Length: 322
Image 1 (tube, helix red, strand yellow):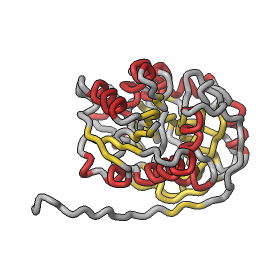
Image 2 (cartoon, one colour):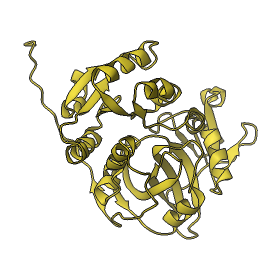
Image 3 (cartoon, helix red, strand yellow):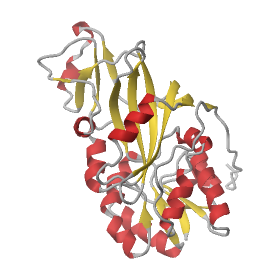
């Protein structure tokens, strides 16, 4: 009944959290990690054992992962990157046939979350306002442009007036143009939400993004208050939701209006802050997989906890002598 962290990459803190919870809940069970190049993955060095898999786009990816799960008595897979979510969600029945749970929402919800336009529709249906989208022939400046299927803040633009708009941006069919939400007037939050196997919200932790680097939080603080109350009411259930979902919202500093931006159906890079605050999603996933009843909603986590991230190193001796 081991746990596998898929596409582990740099997710060292997440790997440590799962190892810690496994040691307490099921001594002797191991954390496995996969990556295309595990010897170059920091998180794979933290895992009890690292395994090599092909690219997610490779047709052999799912078969290879099924084989590894069967050979290593894996009971739970936790995906970590956007590109693998739909593949693993669609393959969930194959893994369940061999007794493996995959912590990923239903394919329909993954597809919604991967398309910012569909995500806006979902949030609107749950009573959360989103930035107004603009047609290319009716742009209002300043505006914000980003790919409808992007992640990690790649290829995003703040465009202040028409002179800053390029022909390439207008011709890019993946770019969507939307209302600009000024950081001078709004605070930005990431919310770690946990959903049970019945698609019910069991916990939500808003994290104020004090400082961001490379699209990921580097300084943050947990916050209880009106935003949490709103999310608890509006996102009490989401069809197809399962495990950890990470939402992003802006909140106006004066009016308190919340504006939803996106939802990622996986653990976010800043989840360690929620974990240390007491939102123990790794433990809950393990408990659910191994027969515990689904959790009731709770808010037993520390308000005002601050995270200050920094770079660290894992040093490996090259056995090849190079």
